[in-house]
Amino acid sequence: MKNKSTTTQKNWQRFGFGNIKILAGISLLALSLTVGLATVAPKYVTASDHDDGEVDTKGRNLNLTDLYVFREQDQNPAARKDDLILVMNTNPRSVARQQYYFSTNALYEFKISRVGSRDTTPTGKEDVTLRFQFGVPDSRGQQQFKLTLLADGSNRSGIGITTPLSLGSNNATINKLYSGKTQISVFAGLREDPFFFDVEQFFRVRAGALGIGPAVGFRPTTQAIDFAKGYNVNSIVVRVPRSFLAGHTKATTFDVWQTISVKDPRTDKFQQFERLARPAINEGLVVTNDFLNAFNSIPPTADLSSAAAPVVAEARKTLKALGNDNNRANVLLGAFLPDVMRIDTTVPSGYGNALNAKGSPVAGRKLTDDVIDTTLSVLTNGAITADNVSYEGTPDNPAQGHKPLVSQFPYLALPN
Image (cartoon, rainbow, N blue to C red; front, top):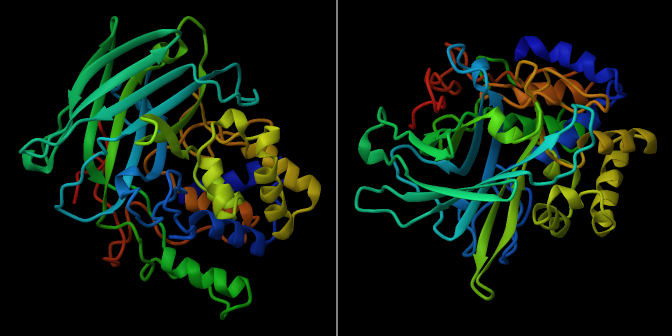
């Protein structure tokens, strides 16, 4: 998306995002993407980002990293036009050739709302839920999982199995489950982490912008380092027909978010403590760890409620401290809260490809979308357009570059 950053930035200017100062852009992105920014509390709620540490009550397999939602035909022109792909990645920093497992004590859920139009205010109403529960690994490292489909009062379930490393990296178990006559395909297992970003240099850029270090820019492509290179993630990839999500409606636009809930042994009930939709929202606007934990434990319906007012107030304070006046802070909050990933399936998928009247992205997110470059360009009014890291990398720089995506479902590159 290097060639799209300027166009995206101009699009966002139309909605009042064009004059954010460089310091504001760098600082906001710092808050959103700093590795290990939040201190993890040893409770049943924690913050979510790509790398927020581990404690006894939370392992990496309970840590959401990224959500991707796109029309399959935009990834594979030979695919059916009606199918959408949902990707949930967890377990960051999974090292090469080591088997990792999904938690047996958690619910991994995609949640979807039907939306009247791309300009409709998100409701956070769960019209459709895809719920995954995983069993204990067998001697080959394979886990059985149960997929429960909750939609329009119906409750259907099916059983599938994960793809362990013992099967060989070129083998992928594609589970075909059914809800009535609707076929839903599922892959669950390790894949290469598709995210890319020069985190180390970003820390230096941020320090210079804040006046606590020398002023520097991002490293050139020949020197930039991709912090996610060589790591795997636990992926759940779903192919689902748009018609299934629409149900008995004519909906073509949907809001998607993902959650992880863990069973509390004190009550034997599941409690949500991870939630993620668009990149760089909750971690970007909410600073206080308790507020961040609280944000991750509530549904989107509560993002603008009176109960969440202290969290929203902090988000507004953060935006104002970064150089936005009160009006612009409210515009930003209006664009990104409630926090959901919106996809208008009538347009080509791609983060930043299309915006609604509030300036919010509405075309989902593809696997190789450069969300960092898009964010840098928008928040700095084009002053910084790239961290000089791309998915493909640079031929003369071994410190970046991911494996090619596979041409068929589940599309993510093979595990390292």
